Length: 450
Ligand code: NDP
Ligand code: 2IT
Image (cartoon, rainbow, N blue to C red; front, top):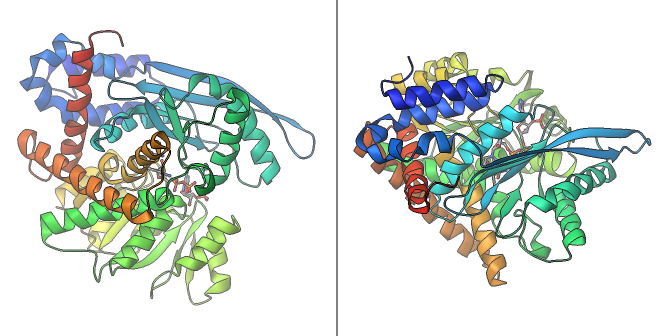
């Protein structure tokens, strides 16, 4: 039996039964429902209004065919997805992921998590997510463009600036958002802020590119300061991934006085004991779109290890998993703890397995869960939406100041909820509960429709 509360136990059993082929979705639901147990016990109106069974069922789950033509003339077919999970507190909002591993389970776990994360930002955004099993690796710019155009030719009818606002995620950055936006505008003949993460010349927000990584470090700095009277300064940091989130987490950690000694991609990781040179990483990853081992061509003294999993054996004080789900397992967590790591903050979505989280919690590691720690990206997407609505742009400093404020507020509300309902400092429970209460109260106020 996973839950003492019989209502939660029944809802969870139904989730498992109905979604038996969706392990990541079940994993995400189990974690949230476990955190909500004390709230459900305290508030009978939750069961009375059927909140939990309504919360775990997406309002809409859309799949569609994406046919496109490769440069060699071959016709290819991929599957597109959009889940519109919960609209209680605002229009659906969440990224698009293009990666061959994308399936129903991945999209639903991401959409489910997004609801709570968006709620934590304090901005009016519901939860959604989408993407495709399309693999952008090795594709030409023209192939990416044709794929994005075909994808949007179906997606456009489901989204809108006040309906559902997609953005980037793995495999979707400024280039893809540009092609998607162009096609949306062509079809509907309407210039609106229907996507975020846009280029700065056509409605994008300063600071959005940096926001998830910077926000992760603002959250971590706040957690270190409030819970340990400490900071990034002088710390050794290991960061998995070398994409959008990882690069800007590394940049901010460095500006806070830390040394980032290791980064990875899905092939392997590099170790540079004097600190990774981020200009080189940006050149390899953002400009050339090549593999991380190319770093050795610039810095032959660095070390490359094939396989990304063992990055957690590199000794560090702070670990920032910024690649993908379940990339940090029990073994990785034990290696981190053994080497003295005392802070783990999640930049990726659900990067730590439940067993890894237990290792952190039982070894007093300061642990910042993804929903709270990586919310800076979507929060700044929310700021991009505000600027688009106002037909106005804020400066980088204005956006960055608001982002810092939002990350501090997220820490404060997660911490407060942990004190009220769980153990002070249990930010997993705190973030889930604080995100949930706002959605729950909004659902009750709006009656039973969804
Ligand atoms: P990018 O596509 O820019 O980068 C992803 C990085 O993770 C790459 O280095 C990639 O390596 C690595 N990676 C991806 N999949 C795997 C895998 N299966 N195994 C090992 N490594 C992998 O994506 P983002 O940086 O945008 O996203 C990273 C994480 O952060 C994701 O979990 C995403 O959901 C989350 N996130 C992103 C936000 C954003 O604003 N972009 C906001 C909040 C969370 P390779 O190139 O070899 O595939
Ligand atoms: O997981 C995430 O929060 C994102 N990929 C960002 C979503 C967004 O709408 O900016």
